[in-house]
Image 1 (tube, helix red, strand yellow):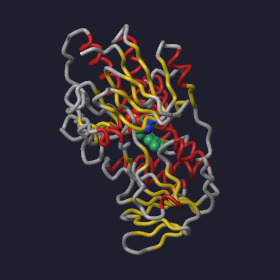
Image 2 (cartoon, protein in one colour):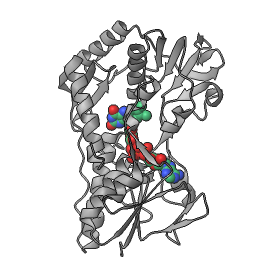
Image 3 (tube, helix red, strand yellow):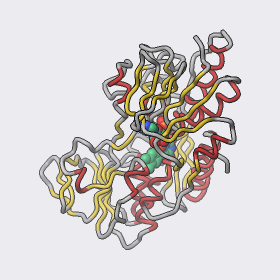
Image 4 (cartoon, helix red, strand yellow):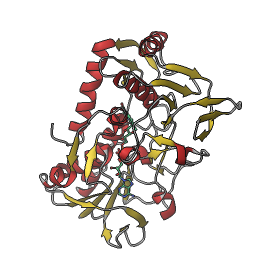
Length: 363
Ligand SMILES: Cc1cc2nc3c(=O)[nH]c(=O)nc-3n(C[C@H](O)[C@H](O)[C@H](O)COP(=O)(O)OP(=O)(O)OC[C@H]3O[C@@H](n4cnc5c(N)ncnc54)[C@H](O)[C@@H]3O)c2cc1C
């Protein structure tokens, strides 16, 4: 199979990790990266942006151009798997021999009545582009990692807000008692009200409605519950799972179209216990780097070793001066070591910086 023209679809953590490594693993290939955005924005800092802080950005054409990678800014609207072309919104087509599908994910509120009109989703830079800063009582929906980090950041940066965090479970309910206690202590200190067991079924102009009929009043609703993936793969006929993520083999190739590799949030990749790896830059980066290695190996006529991944840590920022880094076992279940407080914040910040570096972005 020829790999002369490699197109990387999506310049997020996974796509950039793949593209920048391909320069070394597939010398001589013509590498093109396509993204709808001109600039890379650190998605893992979007809760900081939602709280009014400035966050770093990089010019993709410049960063990639310096490495000899062609960057095309444009929105992919379809894949023609037979013709091996990516179709762009402006009518252009990008032909490929090998495609790296790395389109990531967006917010997951589309089906919730009222969310589109009354909630600000915190999942992509575009979500926040025209969003008015929250005022009064801010309701953060979703007590997963994003919701927890957002609630803490808002409460710390904007002390005039009253912040409520609503979720099915307590934040970090899956971690150790020590980890849970630390998070609870910080949220208490920051004045964040936590409402566990709250399933939000609608967003209104006055707040949110819960499954049991309770109305929770709030001037601002910030949605962090769930992510959804682009429909392109499913629409083109690539084999996908129930959520629309590309199903891959052990070398991260599409199970239906071996000339397509899929990495990051938009791919369904099995972890050490057989479950699909969680959507995270911690999983996206090694997947992207691995895809570059596998493509390079096959270009030389070799068969790559299977993708191997194990979890090490779960990291949470709790504002700018507190954080928690929780060791986990290979299968993401909690281990004993927990770093909290300023040390936790310091480690988390270093990991975020490292992630940008691992994606090939200059510091
Ligand atoms: C607030 C927040 C905090 C987070 N914190 C953490 C954290 O601490 N640790 C962690 O591991 N993970 C965290 N995550 C999750 C992490 O950001 C994602 O899992 C990660 O970005 C996935 O990388 P990716 O490359 O697969 O996709 P993305 O980063 O989503 O990149 C996909 C790229 O594809 C482009 N694209 C999409 N559709 C098209 C199209 N049709 N045409 C052209 N281009 C397109 C997008 O513009 C984007 O640049 C956080 C997420 C959020 C929202």
